[in-house]
Image 1 (cartoon, helix red, strand yellow):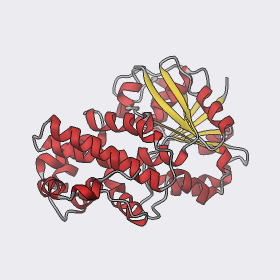
Image 2 (cartoon, rainbow, N blue to C red; image 1 turned 90 degrees about the vertical axis):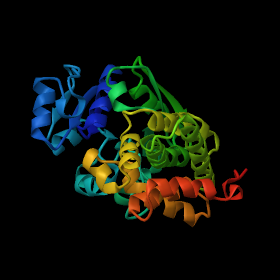
Image 3 (tube, helix red, strand yellow; image 1 turned 90 degrees about the horizontal axis):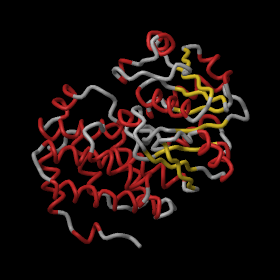
Image 4 (tube, rainbow, N blue to C red; image 1 turned 135 degrees about the vertical axis):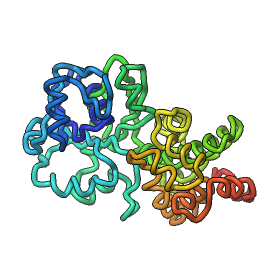
Length: 335
C-alpha cells in the first residue's frame, strides 16, 4: 500500500481518488470547500459533483493543505488547468524535494502557452524524472461507476511510469506505459478543442458524416501538431490520442462536447455560457493551441475555426462553411 495525496475534490479529483483507493492505496483528498470535505468524510458522497454515488468508506478528505502534503510524497494533481500555476506557487514551500508529481490535467496555460508539465517545471524546477502524466478516454461520470476503462501513464522515467501504473492498477482501470510525455499531453489538450467542434455540429443538427469528418480530421491536426514538437506518431493512434478524442467528441457526458452543442444550437457564446456553466477547458485553451500551432508552422483549420467562434469573430455556421471551403492541400498529412 502506498500513501497518495489527490489535490482537487471536484468530479475528476474524487474519481481519481476512488480509483487509487480501489487499487489498494491510502488516499487523502484535498479540497478547498470544508462542506465537500465533511461530506466525503461523513456521508461518503460528493453530491455537488457526483450526485448519489457512494464513495469508499476509507477515502479520507481534508481542507488543511499542510496535512495533505504531509500525508505522502506522491501528489496527484486534479485542479483546473488554468489554476495550476497559482496553486503550485502557494504549495511550493510544502512540496517535498523528493516528491512524485502526477498530472491528470488536460490543457494549455493561456498566459504562457505551456503544457501542464512545463508549468510544473517552470514553477517548481521539478526534475523531469519525477514527473508523470495520466491521460486517456476517462469520463468521470462513467469511471466513478467502476466501468472498465483504459489510460496511459507517460514519463521520461520508465521506472516512474511503472510505479504510477501500479498505483492506479484497480481491477477496472487498465493503465498502459508510454515514454512520450509531449505527445500524450498535447493530445489531451487539443482534443478538447476538437470536441467543441463536434459538439457545434451536433447542435446545428448535422449528422454522423459531419461528426466523423471532424473527428478524423481533428485527429490529423492532433498528430501533426504532436509530430512538429517531436512526439511519437503512435501516441495519436492510442488511448491518449484517438481514444480520448472519440470519448470527448462522442459522449454527452463530455463538458467540451456539451458546450459545443449549446454553442451550435444557440449560435453565440453568450447562449452557450448561459446553458453550460462549468469550466470548459477547450474554450479556455483554443486560442493558445492555435498560437502553438502557428509557432511551428502547422495548419490546424478546425482548431482555428473553433478559436474564432470562441472569440466571437464568426458564428458556428460560418466556421463550418469555412472548413468546407479550405484548400485540401493545406490539410495534407506531414509524414
